[in-house]
Image 1 (tube, rainbow, N blue to C red):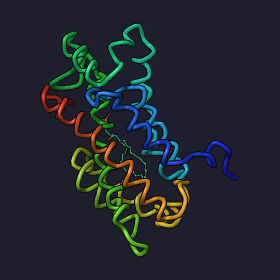
Image 2: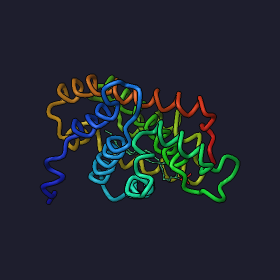
Image 3: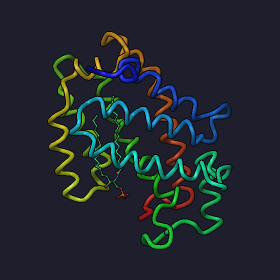
Image 4: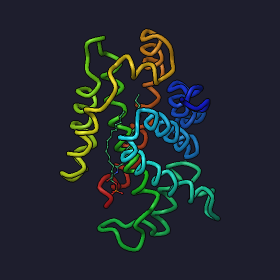
Length: 216
Ligand code: 1PX
């Protein structure tokens, strides 16, 4: 019943985007690869079942906001996260105190995805060190409680926690990833996760340096 697009889809390709987004000098985080990586994650999440569409819907909305900037007259200002921050701050396009004139700045939109990337990193790290008996729902909940949940109101936390219980088990999860045997999944995660971590760290430093970590 799965479409061809889903069948050919591998988490390996998704994580490769996070390597590509570091470019050649490992300094800038390139927007198009960053968004492409996110689109792949969304596709992966949607293949887990309709219950997760409430999560992917928000990610999709944020990806679309960013693609809007990339398709605008200001496109070149959004070539990297670094150029975006420089441009939006200089042009006063970021709401710093409360959402008002610029409710959907690139800076605040990317910050939401950035926080979610931390969840992904923690979750995949747990998966990497898990055993056949480990429960995906527990790994997912723990990763969430250590990261993203701190930015979510009670009602979202509650809904997310309920959704996590519907996660497929570890074997089914590995199947959906389309990477191969569980040994191959482990090898892929070992090879790809340092790049996700690097993207996270560079973004975190950029935001810290400009005092943007609490954007409303
Ligand atoms: C092998 C594993 C791959 C799994 C890939 C899944 C990646 C999913 C990433 C989740 C993306 C969620 C983006 C959330 C951004 C956010 O925090 N938005 C909130 C704030 O936005 P606002 O504009 O209002 O300031 C917004 O309120 C979000 C609401 C949606 C609910 C978010 C629940 C987060 C759960 C994250 C874990 C997903 C578990 C998927 C199962 C694998």
